[in-house]
Image 1 (cartoon, rainbow, N blue to C red):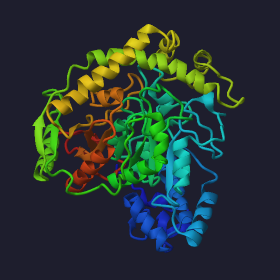
Image 2: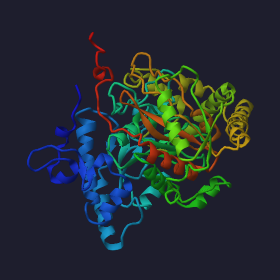
Image 3: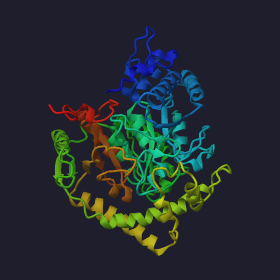
Image 4: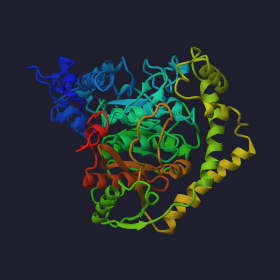
Length: 538
């Protein structure tokens, strides 16, 4: 049975134009002045706000109504962990400021969602999905949030995530947390939304905010973006501040935008960066461009693109869809060169040592800064807390926590060797050597496969991606929708050298305009219920 959202959207009749309820009783899609809110870009909303066709208050009310209809009821995506009780007040202030002074920029009065491992000064705890942090009300903005707020963005709420950013168990279930339960994929509800930024991907795809912010250590922006059919950018490590974000590993962690279009990602990234001087303090070679101004439909012309493929036979049904996407790049004037990544087995072994070691050190340092209401102050205490909580361990354990807690610290020679090896093998001897050796502008690849069935017994069943080398090296990685297979979205990855966000965004924008690969969520119960003849003979 296909789930229709339209009857469910009539929950706030005071905002009929935006929330999707007609005064005559006829239900319509959640709409803005010029179309469904699920299709509105940030720049389109900007125009509507500036011309008085809508207001920030109306946008907030519309999104809250849609969250109630789609996330709390109806399909029950469980992608939004908590909404901000201060959002309407923020919207009112920004509406008044817009009338008196004009917009601060593209994000003025635009509602966005934050992954719930990112602190904000709003009356919301930052939980990382864990019951142990249920009272982690820090009353401080992470620098990226302060930058978004300074740009005029409204913090609409916090999104669900794979608990502890998917770094607790080797048998975890993407999108599940003790605080929020399981996030569903809005395209096919029994399929994974991937993680750890599952809620940000699902909510953005379902039109529950204008955009979301996710975080990634290895694949946690790009996988949920691809599987939920949205744009996701993992920036160069150091471009964005990681302060006041619940950590996994400082050498790989980064936040990034998750949006419904590449232009929205460019706008979000520019606001998140804030003052370029701060980036140069983190990384002396930091390079920042005007991401939105650099977008061009002609940006693929004369580009040399390295083309990566899955192993032969790994995803035979995806190969023709990827081939069609590559033809669009070629038709746009690009030269395509098939390439192969170097062996990554040594990278993976070194990465595990780095992540385990940094997690213990970084998490203990973070917990020491939390309010007194947080009583678990070390990783060892978290392990004890989880062991005594039936809710936390109902589906999987904490083997990674235990393994990390046994590490010897960042002064351990084994850690230092692993860190140096992983960075060298993934970066200078890996991606950078491939780019320079073939004189390539960037690489493309299928981001990952299709969303797998949620399996509460065996955990995630992911079958490969191209996230590890850009994650370990710290190089940028953009994913853009390239179509779907049986209603399951697919993404194309654009991977480049450090600080090449502008190049990747412009290339992704050109592909997006040619490809038109994004699909609107259908909220189907399963793929099989819509395959003719699947459940009965013809």
